[in-house]
Figure: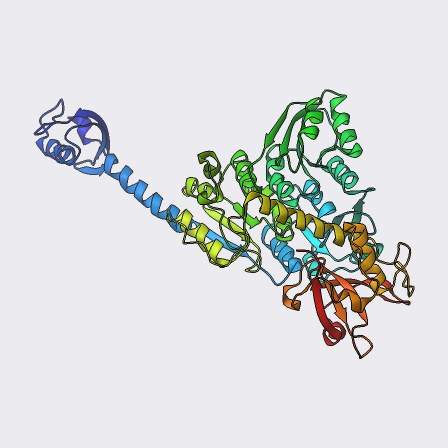
Length: 551
């Protein structure tokens, strides 16, 4: 009996219970403790074999029942888990403020940053190689550092900028130097050369095998989705053309292959983005795997499944605008978190697809399947990028609820595949004309000329449409104002033409809208081709109309 008088006794009993079953200890002298244990057993299932751990105090009274405690602890854990689940929108007035918020929230102690042109996708995606989850990505205009970006640079000692001087001018570099910041420019002859050099910066040749992730240099959605996968694989994102592996990318790959150090190659995106031709060429260098869905949303889900869900972060971003998700990419890399793309007005649903395999890779299915694992969802972008309906839909899915009925007005919901491809093609076209417009900055204004060395205002816009799309339009600003259809100033998108009455009479000036409230135009002989803010008092006062020629 001495053993029963120790301060605490733990006994584990494996008992087959049946109706009216009795339990007794080897020593029957302590009927009181026997009765306490029997009471516990009687509350258990009468037909199961149950392992029960019972604790007795020094007076042989039952003080805990491990079987009951396990159930209680499990319930408490479930309640705690539900309470800790969080969905947060990272929103701001513009892209500069969004990037600043991300820096202050996630990279407040960083001493290095990467700065990219706020309107230039092609070089910007390469910034994710350099950031690699350790540094924020911030935005600048081509010729001037935004004040919000200056504020975000507090504590930063070194900045990498991606692209040449046409993308980010030497004026910005001087501003950065004036803030006491060391500047390293990663530049090349084109986006692919810049990309290869960014990969060399982040993942130089060493004595270890190097995996790589391949994505389209012309389709932002797939390349953005690939950034978190690249971090997990400790790989750079390398950009290719649809039907060609650019020379600079080949050279980077061969620098590893020659030493027997080229690891696996993963292509992100379907054959409409990276063709079979490219896949076959890459397969001669190393083992190639492709991750692709029927559309960008499915592709993001499939990539997310390869990355894996963790409780720290899940990133939600627009599949239609690259700016917010670019700044969010370092956050995804930091937490090894998946990036899931959504539409502006809806969560891509099971019903949007035909086959069971397609449905299983919808965004709706992703959140349903992972509702118990996703504890913190960050939605990047304001209501104009991702509607509240989408955010609430994600919350419902994580709570085990069904999606609400689709909103009635949504031109992009449930698009047939051909139409969605057309939307992507239009997006690529608009990026192309904006890229071309930026390349004209600084060229002289000469009345009556339409490029390529000099321009007047309508000559510039005529040149851009001819070079970008092969579309011939008049070299008269008044005539150009009759093309396409009218759009409000609040509904402008890249590529729209804006018309002004700068002489006090009718239309006398035209420029091209390039996003973020900015206009590129051939202004005057003293300024040449410049970038202007459409919200400045002068352009607000003289604005007449805007026309959309594409889309």
